Length: 204
Image (tube, rainbow, N blue to C red; front, side):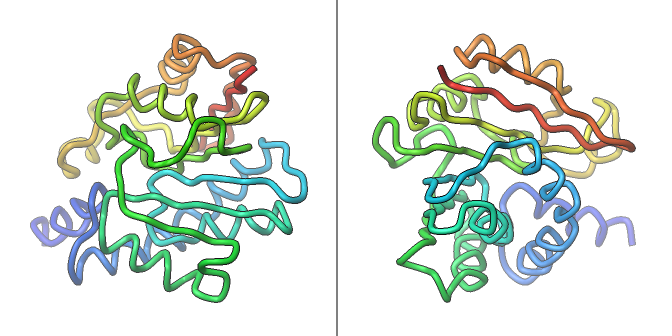
């Protein structure tokens, strides 16, 4: 039983195969409360261009479009399985308002100043070279654009860090400091019991 538990949750970083598909369905459902609350900390308007990094099963892409009717949303994920799932979940608007591709947070395939909003839900734990990734987010954001990181606060010695390979835990305060060091301003930390946190920065 312990091995099955570990095998399943090891899919968090890069879902693959049958267990990966199960994990993506779990993510789309399980991350909903955090994501919906976290997005309430972001200022939306109609017609925005938005990016979700580590888009997983694609549910956040749908939630972003609901908050910016007439907008366009882009998703990127390192996992081929995630890209396939995200495209399927958003197939009705794929190619018109929803665009999904495979790639990494440290090398985003978009031009400078492309996005009004960038989100990252339960994913920065797995990003390589976080300061470099934050510079990439900064590069693709428009001036006045918002970057929102949503996560559940986990202690460094949590069972999750022992179960999920390649996971690095950051406190909301650490992420706030790192965003400020990267050049974001008006960085705020929002918390909701029992363990939700959103760290939102603005690029001025």
